[in-house]
Amino acid sequence: MFVTVIEAGSFAKAALKRRTSTGQASKLVSKLEADLGVQLLKRTTRALSLTEIGKAYYERVKPLLEDFAALDASVRCVFGTATGRLRVSVPHSFGALQPVLIKFARAFPDIELDVHFSDRIVSLVDEGFDLAIRIGVPDNSSLIARRLCDMRVIVVAAPAYVEAHGEPMTPAALEGRECIIDTNFREPLLWRFRGDNGEPSIAVLVAGRLRFSNAETCLAAAEAGLGVARTPSFVAGSSLCAGLLKPLLRAYEPQPRDVYALYPPGRHLAIKVRVLVDFLVEQFRGEPKWDEGWSKQYPKIAPDVRT
Image 1 (cartoon, rainbow, N blue to C red):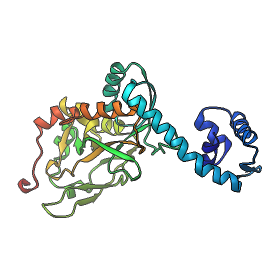
Image 2 (image 1 turned 180 degrees about the vertical axis):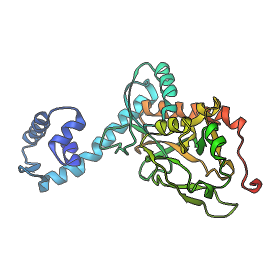
Image 3 (image 1 turned 90 degrees about the vertical axis):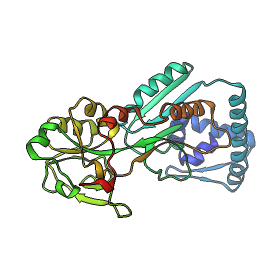
Image 4 (image 1 turned 30 degrees about the horizontal axis):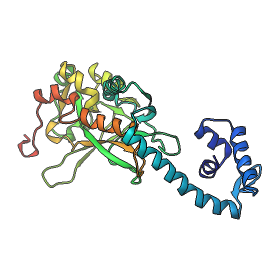
């Protein structure tokens, strides 16, 4: 608890992380000080600070605790089974992961899954998450990244919309079109497409009266014939297979983005995390299932065969 208080910056945050009360956190640190016969922390109503001996004690005890945790994890990995609570952060729209998680829960009944669907970038260590699923190159280079699969970003519209308004043959043709904006994208109004071989990507500034911070709602609007939408293929896959949507500008489709499983570094990976990561890698091996049906009907078009 002493180490957690120092790293969290307050008793309240440390108590939250250790799932106890603020009073209990304070009592534990006070007991440690009483056992050692020294004052480790200077307490004021506004801040905490280490005493000189507290700083020295923290610098010695932290690596000892890490060594003990590593030893415990190594024994569990060799002789133990996959058990315990597993906290996972997943992007809100990545519903394609749901059947995989259900399959995992059946395969490992001793693991308690606690999955948070949110587009907020969580701090794995500070917020107590074991694993996060992220799309694109991770911003935090201190985390271990295991690649799971590709994620295609495609442009779609309902067949009725295409029949009524014509099919855009180049990205520039989207200018002036009614586009459905997914505000979850980093650049919601700037749609990027693959350029010619060796050329930079093509960026088109789009506009539209409909803006949603939810990919499924954007898809529903496109299915209703209200405009052109940009969406991850894992969201649109079933609608494309059913003929409710048609992919557009296939020859300009940008390079796929990678989907990663991220977890904090450590000398020994907890067995519960390892089995989930290995399970995800195996489940996503090859072409993602959400692309299997429609991608055969609408194969990719190379840039050199654009018309």
